[in-house]
Length: 303
Image (cartoon, rainbow, N blue to C red; front, side):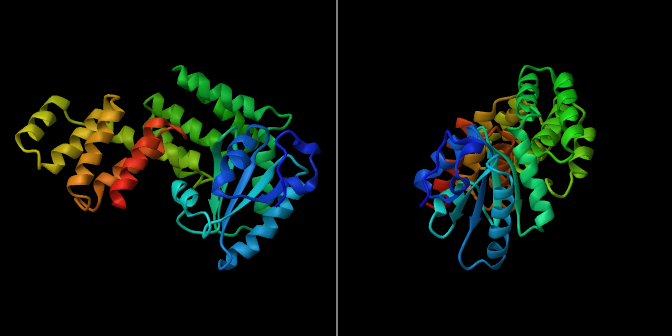
């Protein structure tokens, strides 16, 4: 197996640009390496026909990028835990990481022309255009409450790149922060096909769904009283979780949903589990609260 040099950059030998990896080396090969250049992760299996088509085509596009992007391949049969953590439901699935977090993704085989666009867009994140820095600036503005300014930066990035999942998802989240839910919904509904299922876009969709729920959430005290009177009132517990989340108490909302799942995982067609995934998807990648919640939910599912 080729050893990946984290300091090589575009000057690294071509053999270092593409390699196989495992769960044991995922942090070094993907998360840490993506601090320098974008890293594409190809989830595949030997029995998967489309994987045998996509893999070589994606490798060719990465090679053509000349080291501006790297690629690692993960056999899901041999690395089931990491595939489960990233919720890989079908293969081939491709994730792209930059600066330690997922920035794009797609499923299924793609023609070479679309793969070139995908790789070129990733290369631009760390290129001379400064798009990575611009995205960081916009995210910081949004974190600081300057949603209008953040929206302007995200929109400018989209104007430069056209199909950038991080910028589109960020712009939608900025609209949500400004309580412009219809604008966010329209933006997400018209996302280009190439990035429509990207993690950043899905995260914005999850945040939009939670924002819609918040507008209809009932009073927390009334729901607590109803639940105290009847702890088996699953609807009251579910509504309480929504109300808690609406007022910003995400941890308490997760606790109520986990308790509901523990009591009756099939209630309302698995509503507790679906709501938990919506909350987790809306949170930032690597959020400790989301990671803890996912682990607890998984332990209940497989108990």
